[in-house]
Image 1 (tube, rainbow, N blue to C red):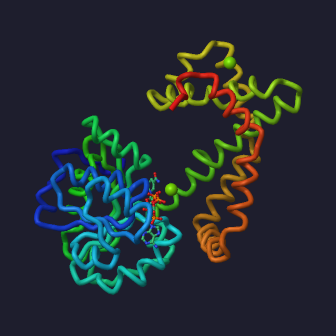
Image 2: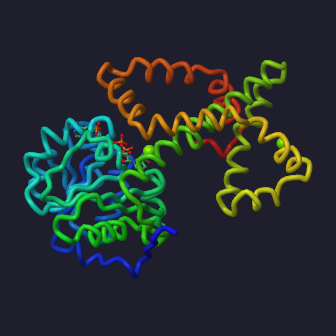
Image 3: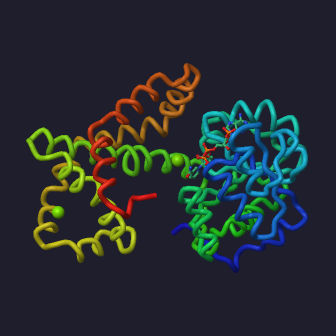
Length: 329
Ligand code: NDP
Ligand code: MG
Ligand code: MG
């Protein structure tokens, strides 16, 4: 079993008198830094001038240029997009990374795949919330927390583990649970999860079901309701109590169809594809492909994104959601 930690296992005092620089104020940057501030910690945001800089200022955060924030801080949490972290690290962070500072991440990508090579005289840790930034914030405001993973890659000061736990407490994660992992395990499982199941698997499954119904002559509105709208209701039940719990709430007919037809949809071919996808992650092939894609300004990323934005399911979805008051902003 993984080692787990709760409120009583973490001491916020470890961070008292220390300054934390959160670099980036996007999804995770905003959520984490507001929680740290409300936990009584000393936070400064490192950014370039622009949209995020204005948002952080409006939230009452102290904002500085990245280099100045790194200079001022003891703990530096890098919450920039993964594909830009290497360049910003080399030009604006590394030159000011004095001995005994602590370098942090919420995803292991850049360390594990060697895009960032920190000096040996700093701590390198990870605190990775298992949820989007707005949930990190919302749960904290409700007195709850989003679970997080912690990992220690480099422990120069001998305090790296305590700092990771304290930071996790500062963002509210110990109110849920904090589990201990390694940079390698977090990076590889996170990439696999989002590619094969959560994002890639899910969107492809939904599109395939939608296209099958529409091609067979059923109305797109019906297809949308059946294969997209209802996924949330089912996923909520799975989230609350696992597969068995979900099956308690669906009809016997649905359960029989689930048990006998599901494995035909996700058959041997899907298992093979998942194995291949995992190997591409483990060998660094995916990381290299994604880094190269960024170097040529993302032609594939942009074309595929656009094609899906123009898919019929997106058009119909707008109409169908427009009929339901619950989706009115
Ligand atoms: P976002 O894309 O939401 O935010 C990125 C931030 O970085 C923005 O504030 C952006 O500011 C800033 N930024 C980008 N380039 C630069 C630059 N050159 N100099 C200064 N600031 C810059 O990132 P996420 O929060 O999604 O991801 C951050 C990290 O958290 C990643 O490692 C990711 O894997 C990890 N993570 C993300 C999760 C999520 O839910 N999104 C979940 C768990 C982990 P600007 O407005 O100026 O562009
Ligand atoms: Mg991820
Ligand atoms: Mg039904």
